[in-house]
Amino acid sequence: MFKIQRLDFLISIYIFCLCAAELMGSKLFPITTIGTFPLRASVAIFLIPVLFSINDIITEVHGKERARSVIRSGIFIIFLLFLTTTFFTWLEPATIFQKKEAAYDLIFGMSARFAAASLIAFAISDFLDVYIFAAIRKSLGAKALWLRNNASNIIAQFVDTTLFVTLAFYVTDRSVSQNFPFLLGIILPYWLLKCFMSVIETPFVYLGVAWLKGEKTK
Image (cartoon, rainbow, N blue to C red; front, side, top):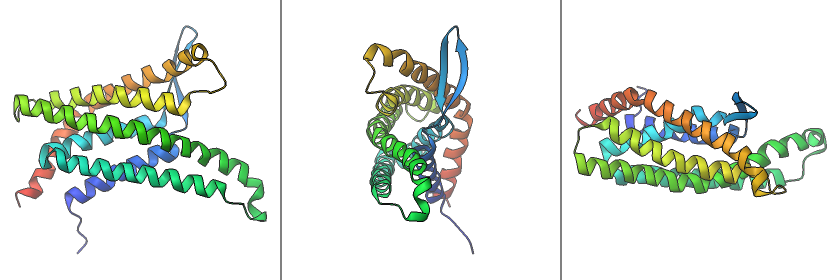
């Protein structure tokens, strides 16, 4: 009979979100314009909050060391993506593919830069998320899951957003003063949207915790 352990299924969703964010997150979409200040966000906004929520669910049910193990696996996946995209774009194309090579290298070359930026931002922010979540739980006990979920996510996602956007979108041939408004126009709405989605996902964290605990009691 087709059966998947609940923790394995949750980790597979985690890896899917991670890979999709890495490979497709280079696309920015407009949110709004305040005066002449355009606000944009990466399409990865729909995936990153899910990663942090899964971190919290696993930490709550299986403890911080289990969550850290999942994060280490995620870091390894990002590293493999970086190596793979770098190697594949470096290879000489076959004659039949030469017309498509420029587009291929452009898209997946950006993915390589995104993977490198994510490797740093993800490693720091996800471990920070688990640390803050576990510290609040140790202080308050099992109550107020909503508090530790949102507090850890909001702080860790600010670190993640700032590091990732700076490393992924900083234009090297422009000055800091030229880059600042552009980067801020991505960081601020991107982080606020993550915070908003973290709040929206709070009921799903409760459901996820109950769902995962249900397997442990069987």
